[in-house]
Image (cartoon, rainbow, N blue to C red):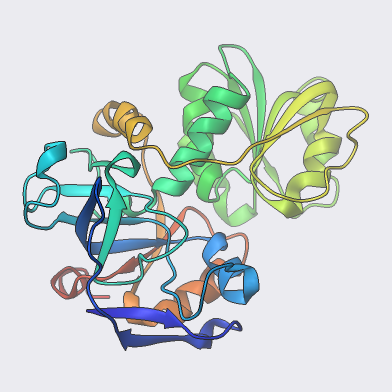
Amino acid sequence: MRAILIKEFGDAEVMQVGEVRVPDPAPDEILVRILAAGVGPWDVEQRRGGWSGPLPYIPGQEFAGLVVGDTGADAGFQDGAPVYGWPGPGGCYAQYVTCDVERLAPIPAGLRVTDAAAPVDTLTADQGITDVLAVGAGDRVLITPGAGGPGHFAVQMARARGAVVVATASPRDHELAHKLGAAVVVDQTAPGWADQVRRVTDGGAEKVLACSASSLPGAARAARDNATIATPVKAELPEADRVRWKTYECRPSGSRLIRMAPRFDDGSLSVHVSAMYYWQDAAQAHRAVEQDDIPGEVVLIVDDDLAATLEV
């Protein structure tokens, strides 16, 4: 099969197309033919030197695709069944990948395959809003940034739980953040955005989901005393003596994806894909993600027929 290979760390140009063998599924794994793969900042970090495994490696942590043959029969997946998942630290910028059955789920009927290629951000947002912050009706919640990968899911999830949502976004993305459910959108490029959040929340947000390292200082300033700030980001945490930081590491979960399916089906949860690239143009996709403030998701189209249909 063809795959994107990284033989040395560096800029986006180190990713090259190569030939490798189709992986053999281990017990409890399913072989999937990939139709589309998500691109996230974690892929960029690994490519720059964060990958801890051997070289060369195949990047990509998330996919949407089709079950191959009888490899999913024991789990009730038929040949050709559409699935999406998060198999592990790499392997998805390729034509085939193996995935543990507990790390994937059927693609909801309400999701296009291109939208389904982003389960990492979906799970990150759901874990932060539901498990860590336990957002409920009437909570004043700040999400930074509110139009990014995890953030654009988190805004919808918090609003659906009855919270009053304040989101940060660049001016370009204010309309998107409002459409997703934010009652107030603050310009994250303005120097005093944290003070503005404090004003509109009568002294600061009670619960905060901070989804990017660059937003952590502002998130802390925008929070009221003893507020809870959840973040999946690994970075220095400011003002830890005044606010309660809760860091968390999102984990793959097919069962959580299954529980979220009704929200995709009824339209209460949607995916915003801002850019799609043919998978052999992965370098362009990485450069887009490196812009840091790109809204929603970036997706690689792996299947040639799908790429032709979408004209990417």
